[in-house]
Amino acid sequence: MTNRKPVTLHRLREMYERGEKIAMLTCDDATFARLLDEAGVEVLLVGDSLGMVLQGHANTLSVSLEEMVYHTRCVAQGNRTAWVIADLPFGAYQESPEFGVRHAVQLLKAGAHMVKLEGGGWTTPLVRDLVDRGIPVCAHLGFTPQSVHALGGYRVQGRDEAAAHALQSHAEELAQAGATLLVLEMVPAKVARGLTAHLSIPTIGIGAGSGCSGQVLVLYDMLGLTRGEPYRFVRNFMDGSASIEQAVRQFVTDVKAGRFPDDKDHSF
Image (cartoon, rainbow, N blue to C red):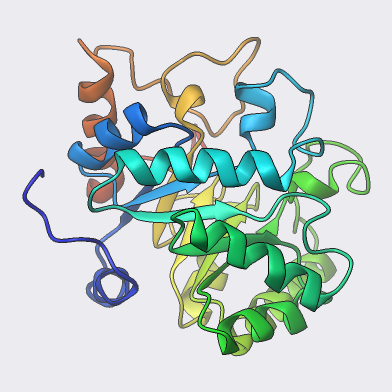
């Protein structure tokens, strides 16, 4: 894997068109960036989940833009070929599209190739403005952690017909505005499969079943480092692995072979 060419949007699009699954993991530092890149992970997500797994908070809301810029820079230093996505944290884009563009620019200057933002509807003008300015966008629908209080906690989204229809409408709007990737989190597998078939951009699932174009997990979750009961969609890849690198390689292999996630054990 160390000799692969840099992963680009063009390459991700080629993978999507030929039906090859995309493997994504969160990453917050240079050491793990190097390991994940060499183990074949195509996309490194500098996620605001670092507020929980690194900082010990109960949710992602306290993560600052400055912290995201710092961790993005660290990941960029360790990475060589993977595509790097950085989260726009809570408060960095809610004020106005202009506000969001200004902060997205800082993440790209720190080494990100793409920014990710949560929600549909009100985010569409921002997506359009970012894309018009040459900033690639990954959208995020379903359970959106930055809206945890509004959603009433960590709950599956899109269970009823009206909610599933809203998801589809928002996904279509985001794709039309120029988003080129879409994360679907904690969405029923049937709904996610239908969205993936309907859209013309890759979907990356986390708790959204095997029908998505790729899969992402929080690195610390898939290494079995989560305190307490893990989420239903998490699998501990350290079980049976002799090293972290072997566990990561197994994740990549199982995602690409369609063995993870299992719609019975890791989906809704």
